[in-house]
Image (tube, rainbow, N blue to C red):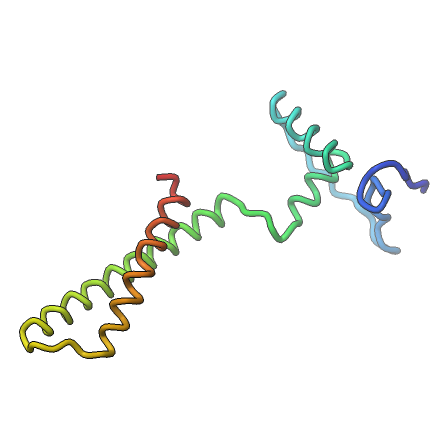
Length: 132
């Protein structure tokens, strides 16, 4: 089978042949609107590949983020924010103790400082991911 040497990474526009004894027999059909088609073709042209190769490589890339994965991460971040809220409650109880007893344990001061640094960053990340 002849190779097309025009364009693509390292001068190769098409995928390498399947390994000996294997055959690519499965075909997937994807329908797109005219706008989606234009965007796919523009991205493929910019990458120097055809649309099927662009889609294939994007789908098998480890950097791809699906909406299901994004939702899982958002749920995990919300759980972390709840946990931080629990920690904040404990810090409030420590503060109440300190006010009653007249002293604040040195170990607890480090926890408070860590919490103060962490909570705004965590809250902002959750808001960005949630689109708020």
